[in-house]
Amino acid sequence: MTDAQATDAIELPSDKVADLVELVVCGLVDNVDDVSLDVTDDDRGTLIEITCNEGDAGKVIGRKGRTIKAIRTIARALGQRVGTSVEVEVLG
Image 1 (cartoon, rainbow, N blue to C red):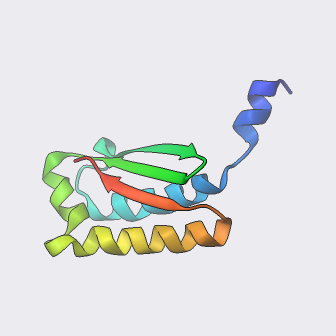
Image 2 (cartoon, rainbow, N blue to C red):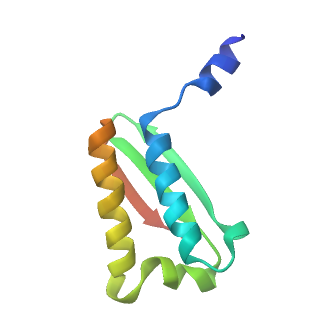
Image 3 (cartoon, rainbow, N blue to C red):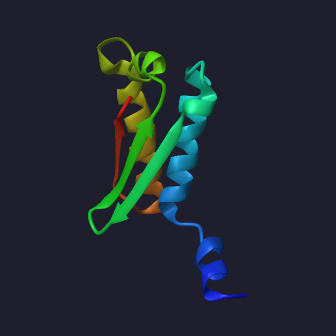
């Protein structure tokens, strides 16, 4: 196994959180193929940026931001469990 394959095989704690966020977001939107997550890890924690169809962004955000707030709460709870700080943003 090469070093690149070994690096790909290692699952970061942020990968579990990103998988959960992707599962929830894909369940909310109509255009699942347009959903993508950009996960950035640094010394402060993990940033997950959700990009989706503009028409679906409202579904992800929800009325008065309640849906994205719930997604952030779930992501942060799992992040604490796996040992990383998590922020979730919607780029639309």
